[in-house]
Image: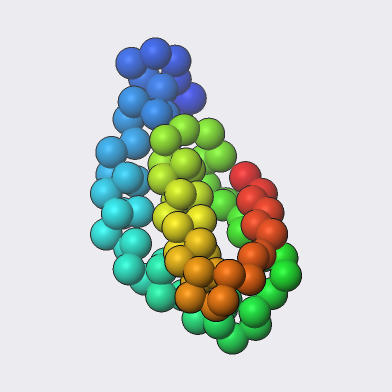
Length: 86
């Protein structure tokens, strides 16, 4: 997508990307749970290779944080450090 400002900015013109994030949420949740339960890491590093600014990045991060928080609760409260690279 071409660079833009205001009405032409990425955050104003990224509805398709948001739709894909919402539609693939169950897949991301399942993959995140599988990695967490298989490894029980002290630290998880998550990389978003898409646009690193805007509401879609925050939506993705929020989804991952929610899944990990739920897994930590079900795992007797053990916590994990999350690192996001955008």
